[in-house]
Length: 437
Ligand code: UDX
Image 1 (tube, rainbow, N blue to C red):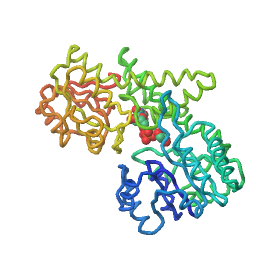
Image 2: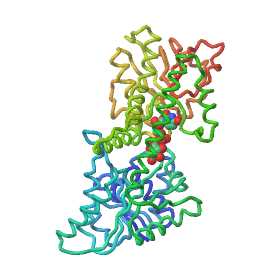
Image 3: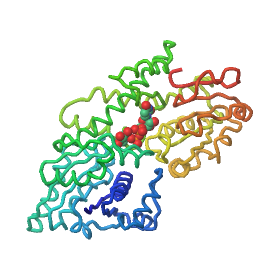
């Protein structure tokens, strides 16, 4: 079986590499020639544990190759996946121009039955648009070629992507033909050893499932953040409340961790996109509007605590920031709470030194020299008036508090991920603040 994956970004590279690892011949395509040249030399443009070794291994085995031209490979593959970006457009919807460009190229060059599958997160109705686009191209060529479209949304988490792809909780496949069902069943058969389910459904439901899942998870986070803020006001302990409600199997304990807000490329974008889809049909997603506004507010919570602590004036204060990435195990800083905090602190006259184990280059690229960069977590806190823990990287979990007490000017710690226990500061000079306390 041979497949092509168009879009060698996060989803495309991980999916392509994992399919190759399962013995399928994969060509990953991208319109960016420099990216493809780097990949051909074994250089991976994103940080994801294990990805580079798997890419190199599968290239050596001749199962994984890279190219810039879908037209050149389309007639030698059984399935083409679309895994290009769908950035938000001006009014919060998903910009489908890259997806439809792939459909155009496909229609302009395909000459035998091929299945065209969208893997990018796309609004309900996109597969239908993809089909129309291909049909228009075929009509322009004056030929008839049989093809099917399908939807196979991706649920992998950054930082855990290979594992998520290799043994997912479920695979969602939207199809409307028996031929497409058979092909997708064959494609995922090697993964069946890992004992998971492929759930087949109609195409709009598959497209909707992806948004509904991400919006549900975002809702849990904003809900627990709201509860944490209220716990602080009424003197309840959010740790206990979280444990207490999470032990009800109807609620469950996962994705119930309060923090300084969700970020990344998925939750913020998908919540906006679903609100937008509903608006287009004259419906208001009231819960999701609240989820979004709680999250925007939540990204400021550490700043508000800082301001209260320093009596409303940060002029000249040195703030150390541990973690810039939107979550651990990634260098991705898109929509990260750290960016909102950096902006607010600088505008309030504070000075910032950041340290992140992996995302320093990304931070330099986006934030530039408005902040200082430390070479390790301890250098970041030297002479600092406050320390903000923004990303819960493992190496921040058990720092040497005596070193911190000695080197900070004023050992005030603001924990944006609630990773420390308030009692570990008993008998120290560290003043500990956390989300909900
Ligand atoms: C998410 C979904 O989990 C994945 O299924 C989907 O395909 C893409 O979007 P990702 O964005 O990589 O994946 O990260 P995830 O680990 O889900 O975290 C998202 C954000 O929520 C992070 O900023 C994280 O810090 C935050 N979060 C997560 C919380 O604040 N509390 C939690 O309990 C869990």
